Amino acid sequence: MDEIKKRLPHRSQHAIASFASKCNLRKQIHFWTTTEDALLRKRVRENVPREQIAKELGLTLNQVSNRMQYANIRYGRRPPASTGHLVMDAIFQRAAALNMSRRDLDEMCKSGGAFAGWSPARGIHNRHLWRAVKELDGHFIVEWSVL
Image (tube, rainbow, N blue to C red; front, side):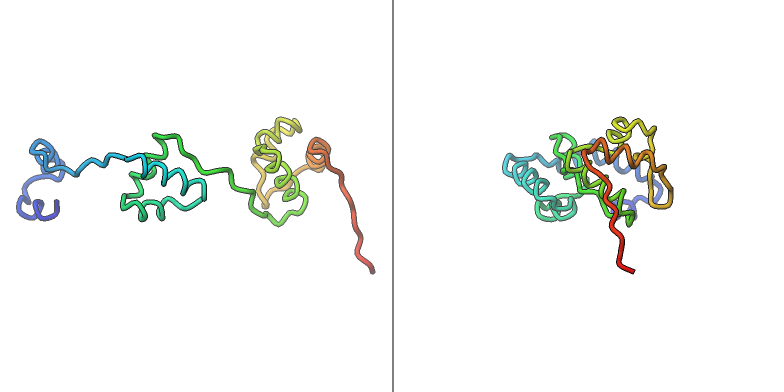
């Protein structure tokens, strides 16, 4: 395309692309085979990044992403990352083990979005913590260090 652009400086890139498509000079369309689909599904199950899958198949990242969307292939839910807040980490880990999202946790505890919108920079009211621990079938245990 760049070579054509140099030879036709008075034409816009859109005009060159339109004319090329009329002349069947556009990029080849890739047709997915069943083996490529199977490999894509297997790699997604193994949580291999899209970039690596694209390299392995010799395709672009866009082609892999579009095929994943078309075939409804999704990565599994990742475990929650550590936040540094011990109680919240424990609550999020337990909720993930029960396959619950933060929004589900809010609905269950009637906390009005306290968990879905929570970040380490924000505080959370203790009653929401107590309610979440109770609803997730847990209890608080306080351990004191020796003085």
